Length: 164
Image 1: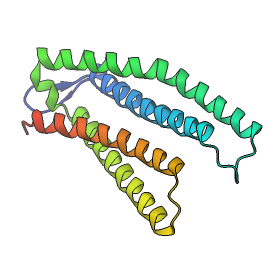
Image 2: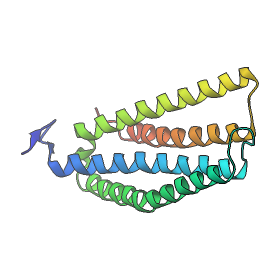
Image 3: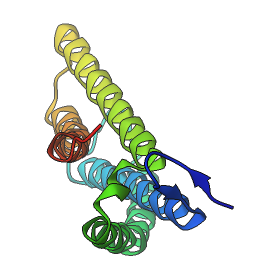
């Protein structure tokens, strides 16, 4: 079943699920990377007041293993899917205007913007409370880097290929 979109562009199930795979792989990669960074910071710079030593380290190690396993699978899946999509855009540039693509990209920009704003609110709140630590700064920096990179990449792509 195909749905007709603008000027002879047709959205096939292949288009929908390929774009969904790319976005799900991107989100999973971003979250896994952040979990990896957060848990590494927890191990390297333990909070002696709140962490229970051995058990906290075991929990962090389990989260690190899960993150690495997820990154090993989902990051290459994202790269391969994006490579496939970019080839299809070169063959048929009008595919960049598929509604499913635009919806997913704008949704991703929306989520990234909300994450960036939430991250900055958290940073300012902790600064005002006088609770800025190296651990906290590293975690805030990691979130800002990941969300900012995703936002910048997709925003640049939209601006570069704007045809509306």
